[in-house]
Length: 294
Image 1 (cartoon, rainbow, N blue to C red):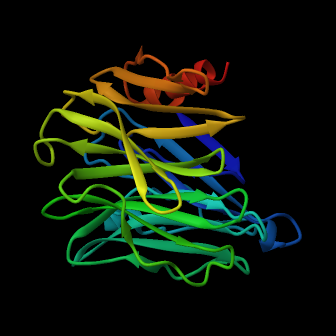
Image 2: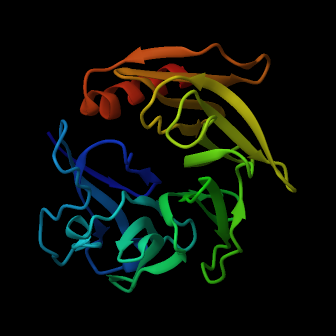
């Protein structure tokens, strides 16, 4: 099924889903690149071999400019996208494959074109699964990603609304915890990031879903759930109209979630079943959102 999405809000393409996706920017009639939006033209496939992410469906046109057209051939990782608040600048971060491994890069859409990708995280280890988060109050842009080293770790960098200088990378996860696959959000003015922790070493079980909150001086972690699922959990954290909730893949064909109740704390875990990648990404996670904000 082919699904087209035009948006000026944050879009995160879930890397666990086997997808083919063209990513680019739309230019309004009249050529005002400052008001350009990001789009995804995506197709979710059931168990493709090999799994691909960047697939170009259309050539560039006067109102559409494709980003990273060789990403599929290159084997690049899934993109994370947002549009800054003022001025509105589309940003896309992804994990780019090279002879030295994967590095997190970022491109912005300016003057009718995508800029040359800037390396924001690059080392001899692989930097993977970037997640961009916009501070709605200040316009600052935050970046989370994980480093696949001897002990995988979740990292954080940020820049202000000018997008010129990025902070040094800071480790979010505990030094002894094998941690991966972060996703972040602002809720009630607090930056939060959820990620997996593999208790007995990377790719081992059991695993934890951990939510860390920035208190202005340090990251404060909280264990949300423990699971014996032995594949990608891909936890996500969301905020909408004052409601905070988290969801993740808890088993084959099953997603779990919990919402925050300001009066009583985190609600008991709830579970939703799915049959296949498309049902999970387009139906179950949407259904969880509806339940969380009702």
